[in-house]
Amino acid sequence: MNGRDLLLILTHLFRKRGNPVRIEDAVEFVSFRCRYGSPSKVRRMLTIATNNEMIVREEDSIKAEFLYDKQVLSPNLADLLKDKLTVGKDIEPMA
Image (cartoon, rainbow, N blue to C red):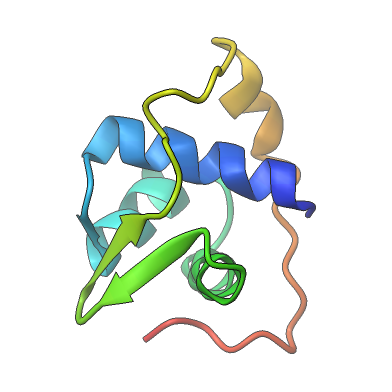
C-alpha cells in the first residue's frame, strides 16, 4: 500500500464519520462496512498513518492532519482501493 491509497482511505473515513473519530468506530467502519481489510490490518494502517503524521491519536480517538474535506475523490475510487490494503506484519496494531 502506498501513501496515496492510505490517504484516500482516511479521507473516505473522515468524510463519512467526521473528525475526530473514535479508534473503535474507525476500525469498525473501515474493516466491516467498507471491507478494506481485517481489523488488525486496519489498526496497522492507522499506526502507519500516525507514524507518517497523517493522523494524530488523542487517547481513544484519531484526528485528521490533512484537509480531508478538500480532497477530491471519484465515486468509484473507494471501491477500487479495497483490494489495495496490504500491511506488513512488522507493524504493531493500534490498541
